[in-house]
Image 1 (cartoon, helix red, strand yellow):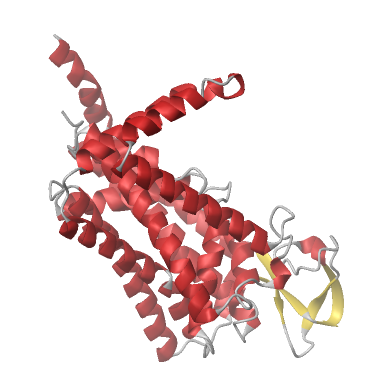
Image 2 (cartoon, rainbow, N blue to C red; image 1 turned 60 degrees about the horizontal axis):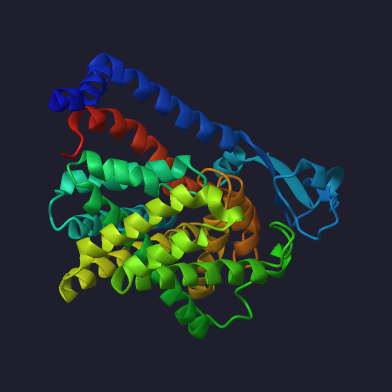
Length: 399
């Protein structure tokens, strides 16, 4: 009786996602993703011109000293102005495309594929080979799809446990995979930042024009708050998973008995349970296991940050690729704490602010940002809407 009842949700899901019904969410999803892209391409923005052929001048309406090319209130119509009002679609259409441009955009596509390949391989490693290549592919793209649909500060980790569980992985192992994945991502960042500081120096990493552009704080302050939080998070998870999981859970429970924290106690109990389960799952893993998983993590993130370099090189000669690469690590903190799904809106403003002084053809910044968002955001919306219905039909709950 209990076994029959347990299969009812599965029967309902499979019934819901028959072929005719599957086509409905696929079409709706593709139309939604397509509309988002088309809407962004039609959004007006103001591109700087150097020959006086513009139709607007910047007036700094909010007196913050920052040129926000997407805010119409910041600009006033003028004859022979310094800025021209254009949509992103018009900016793309104005580009003189060459074989060099094609080659570098193809390289950007290649490193995007490398990024996903690294994630897919890491999922296979962390599952001890229980997930095949196809399953790891589905998990990776659906995880990215979930991340694109949720605020960056929330992420898609909770949904990832559901995704991995439906691929037949038990809850304990699914919890361990998600938690270790997050730990390795943050660990890569924690280790990479000091290397970048040594290689590039700190004087050119923080664009002055972005001071107080986000939440009224200097960009350095935002970065150090974000980096400090990530460092603390890595230290806590690493210590609690590999050394004292039960002590960590006991400390959390004691802390969240305080009256002003008691409302979050149920969530904290789950966190403590997840840490304990992860610790049990990971005990006794060999060094080779960790080397392969973290190597895949580094490969993925290194590829991820190369995308902008190749897109920029498609349009003009970049004088300092290393600084362009390093700035992305600083920008990533801004995107990480973004309250909007996929960093929408915040990403475009941050992109223009971080790279304006490094890209000589200022008018192409909009075009570069569009291509970057297509590869880093819209790609996963489209892929997710195609994969999700078929995946739901094929998978079942883990026993």
